[in-house]
Length: 200
Image (cartoon, rainbow, N blue to C red):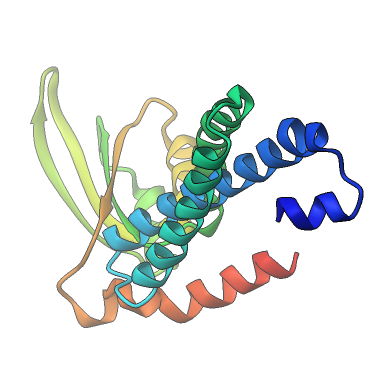
């Protein structure tokens, strides 16, 4: 690539101190963001997609590290590599949040049963378990539910609307036992959403 750009009239200084660090920076963004998505897909049981992402992740990383070794005396290469890693981490987390893949387990603890919240969940066809429990200050109501991550924001908003002091926890779920709740059902939706993001 360097020889090709030099033939086009690009000066060695411009290539070494601008173009090459920029290429390393963007390559590192690519492989780190792909790594973040790959780990997220592995945790959600996407066995067919994760290995493909792993292939491109390793390929991009090798290209970036290869340029580092070819320009080992250039300190800007190291800065670009580190900056690309940090930026790639942020980009990967952004895409993970936007894609909202997989399912989550939500626990909601309130001082008393929330009929409005239960009616909301029935209306949305959420599966849930509602039980009485004992807390530090007496009787409490404990609600368990598993839902798609894409529905989490709406649900949390409703919880706060019903009881702004409600205590809740959220955990990722890799698999569920019932066939009609299997996370692998999300595969077609993942592909369509991924391609729609790419088009925009």
